[in-house]
Length: 106
Image (tube, rainbow, N blue to C red):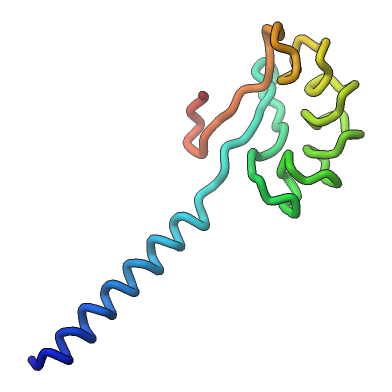
């Protein structure tokens, strides 16, 4: 095999490995928030503001400041600084938990 052919084969495998790695990284599921007592789903911790389930989406069910299921609702159960279930209450005893794609909590 010539040096050029060996270079092309090596380059092909390197590019293929790069695409596989990018596919895995891009398609990795983000962590999610759930109510620690009821298991109620409270959205994903995905920073994309266009993702429907993201807590970063200001117009979505889990990111809107007006939604009862949102951690961004300052008068809601999960966003109030006074609620026992809020991430915004430093003294809350039952704040939502973060789960990774395998179901392990943080």
